Amino acid sequence: MHQPRPKVYTVSEFASLFATSSRVIRELIRKGDIPALKIGRSYRIPRKVASEYLARAVPPTPRAAPKSRGREIDTLTGFLFPVDTLH
Image 1 (tube, rainbow, N blue to C red):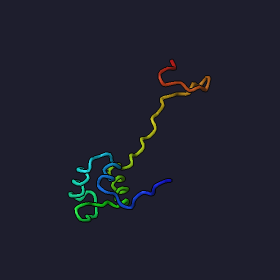
Image 2: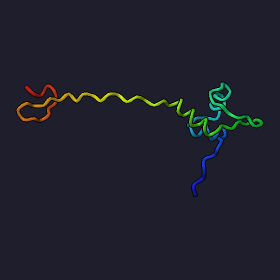
Image 3: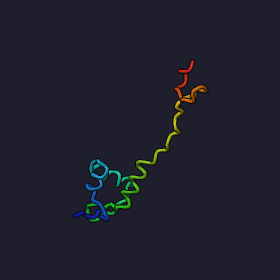
Image 4: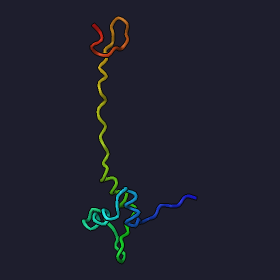
């Protein structure tokens, strides 16, 4: 049976999502980089925060323009040949 994702994460659950330590996550919470709810002495981090933090941490990379293959068409045969092979 598939277990539903929690609506909030503990610090250790959030840390395991990002493959880091709980100490690092607590420091990010203290600095205000990760919004969290403080309940007693522990924190809870909403699931939406995890998605938003991941989006900020790993921005989409723009695709590079395709490289020119450096090929020329042989006018006699119509075949493609790499540049500098036709002499």
